[in-house]
Every structure is written in C-alpha cells, then in structure tokens.
Image 1: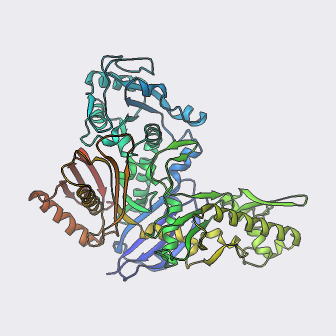
Image 2 (image 1 turned 30 degrees about the horizontal axis):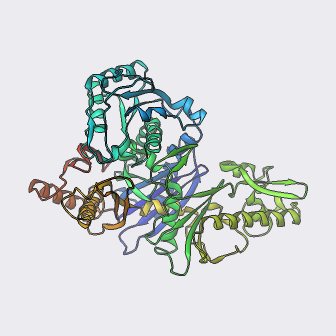
Length: 607
C-alpha cells in the first residue's frame, strides 16, 4: 500500500497544497494546487486538500500518513493588532526590586498594549501580596541567581492572592516570567508557580517564559505575553483544522510547521503558537531546496530563496544543512522586540498583485496590492487596476487572462515598470547577501512570473517544478526536531565540556524520536556553544538541535514501545513514559533539563 504526505501553506492571498509519495527513495510530488484563501481559512484548506487528493487519484484515504499545515493566521493577528483575535494577558513577574524599574508592556506600541495589557503582579517575600505595579519593595524576593541558585522561595499566599485578583479582573491567560528562568532546570519557580495557580483555578491558561526563549528578560517576557495573547485563537484554529480533517475522513496525524522549518504536534502548537509565526517563508525555503535539488549550497555560490506571492516577496538565505539562516539576536514582531527562534527574512512590497502607479514620468510598482482580489481587479481579468501581472502579460511574458485588455498600456510605462521591478529585486538580493560570492537564486511562488529580466550578480536563477506551491511542498517534507537549550556551569559539573555536549545531543535525539522522528534517520543538525561573560563557573549557553524525517506508523510504534521498555528497565537517563489510547499518545517527561513532570499529548488520529 502506498503512503502519502500532504503539505498545506495558508497565505494572505492563496492557500497551497501538495501531495507527496514517501515510499520512493526520494519523495516525489504527485500533485500541487493553489486556491484562494478564505476568510474562515479551513474552507480554503479543505478545498486545496480535496483537489490534490482528486488529482492524485488517492481513493483510500488511510494511505495518507500526515498533513502538515503552515499558516500566517497567528502572526497576522499580532501584526494587525486585531482585538477580535487577541486576549488580555496578566503578567506575573518573579523578580527583585530593580527589574521593576522597567515594567512589563514597556516596549509594546500603543495599539497592541491597549488590547493585550492586563494587570501586572510582582511576587515578593515580605512585600505587598499582589498587584504591586512597581510600588512595593522588600528585602528578599523570589528568584534565581545566574548560576541557578535560589534567592528565596515562592510564597503560596501571594500566589493565592494573585489568582483571586486575576479572577476578579476576568482574565484567563497569564504569563509567568522569572528573571533567570533559563537556568531553572528543576522548575522550582516558574513551573512551581504555574502548577500552584492551576490548582487554584484550572481554567487559567498559564505560559512560562522558559518555554519561549532563553536569556534576555524583556525580550523573553514580550514573546511570552504575545504567545499568551493568541492562545485562545490558536486552540480554536487547531480545533477547526482537526474538525476539517475529520469531515474529509482523514485519520492521519496533523502537524503544524514551525519557524525553523520543522514540525510540531498540534498540542505543542496550541501551547506555543508563537513558534509557528514565520513558518510560511521557511516552508518556501525548504520546499525550494528540495524541488531544485539544492539540499546543500554549492561551495562557489551562496544560495538565496525568493518566494514571490501576490502581495510580498520574501527572501531567505539557505544554509548548507538545508534550513534557512536564523535571524540574529532579537526579532521584531508587530513593533515588539521578542526573543525566540525565527529565520532571517526580508520582505518587500512586491508581488503579482502589486499596484502599478503612474505619476507623470515616474512609474512605481507596489507596495500596495490588490491581494486575493487580483482575479477581480486586475486589468487582464476585466478590472480597472493596473498590476504587476498586467505588465507581465502586456510584454508577452505570460498568458494570463485577456491580453487584449492590456494592449492600451504605453510601451514607456511597461519599460519603466519592468525596470522598477528589476531594481527592487536586485536591491533585496543585495541586502540578503553575506559574502561577495555569486548568488544562486531559487525562485518560487505564484508571483515569480514578475521576474522578467536578468538580475545583476546572479550565477544562476532556478525556477523548479511545482514552483507555485513550493511552500506546501516544504510543509509536506518538513522534518521533526528535538532541541535542547540550556545554560550549563562547566566548572561545577562532574564531567568535561565534551560530556555536557554529548549528554545534550542524546537528549535532543530522544526528544526528536518522541515527537515522531524516525530513529534511524535522526542526526545532530546544530551545536552552538556561547560562553556567558561576567559569570563565574564557566557558564555556557548550549543549544543542540537534532532533526529526522517523520517515521512511518510501524517504525513510530516500534520506537515508542522500545522507549517504554528502556524506561521500565531504567536505561534512559531522561525517562520518557508513553501510554497509548487509540490514536492518542501521551508523553510524560522527567529530568533536570525539562523540570518536573511535563505532559504532552499528540493526536495521532482524528476520530
């Protein structure tokens, strides 16, 4: 029986889908499609999936192993500051007096702050029990030193009073932030505070900042607040995704794609939707590399991927490991500086629907766009707005719509519009280059037809097959990641630095396997060691990532059973308990790196 994987990418203009056969030595694209994105995005997803299933003539839907969805739904809610989709968030900061000089929400712009900002609480010992808002002082405060030593324990009475205040304010989402939570391996503060709050009110949704980012208090706090603000939206959206699959009688595993080009299960995505914010451009990079067979950059060139859609063009750099180049330091999301992993993406307002403006002798293209209304507003479709697509048709580079409707466009306007498009693309490429080496450009996206003229500085421009749905292909072939992000004190550890790295590698591999990776395919993709200045004990920020392709149903079950047996026999340094009920896998983890018991539920099937 053949096996298939389906990838879906939901953009602002179009929803793309691709179906791949994964039984071949190299996965092969059987079908791809593009449909307009619908206001209730699930309708567009259903239409796209049904189209690729029909085109591929897949009659037995049990042959579909997984569906991976990438969506901009969550980040759009933040960027647009949509009050109908964002929730108010209460912030509980575990800190001393000095951090209160810069309160939570201080770096938020006015509109998001008005929508999201809830009450702020500073948990202290000997001070006011709750709602201090920067005015309370005390001699001792709960928190950790940089090396993880506890300064003072939490006060259950303060937590109880805080929960009562949150209930009184009518808020359901909470962000708990500790100053040095990145080194709180035992969960004595953030995790302990979360558990106590949930015991008092199980209806609360509590986000701990250590699950979002590492060092960097304000940026980690900002990201945690944004994540908490979209929790309700994420859970409703993912529930709608699962219901859509059930209606199509698809009993396969549902995944969402993450910012780093890997997959996450629906429960993790519902708890950490912020990690899916930039999955669209990342899917395009992974898909373009696969379609163009550029899994590794050539030594003589640097590889860039440009995804041209209906409204924007996104440019990313492709690393030798097949993943996009990550953004350095902190990331700006909707005007808020945050700390979580995202690819370095340059977006410009140029796409197939970009509006062409003529002002005397000046011709400009974009950044305004007709977006998903291109089939109604563009000249070639009988509309009254001149777009970049009209220019492409007018100069004979594509056969779209009715060419006679653009015959009146002056040759001078066409020439200047082409020059403007070429200049914008060349400038974007120059900004993303990191060396003087020539560039191999992988051009994908439905709007890539607007690239009509040779671009300066390119060694090669590749337009691969299925280029219009490269983002969906990237979602379908995305791998599973296991990541360990910790701060280790090498001077006080029993083993050497190599021992610490090896231990982190094994934990990362185990995480990848638990999340659904094929045990025989998991490899270490990245090891980053960053010594921390001004800290004793040889403090080192250690990041290890292991990736592997999705396992088949048989190998996944075998891996799960093996881990259960190893756990029973005490062979795992970090125990992993798995219990199966139908298609649901519940994973419970214990260990220094993950803190106390954490439970993760993965929906392996939709009933």
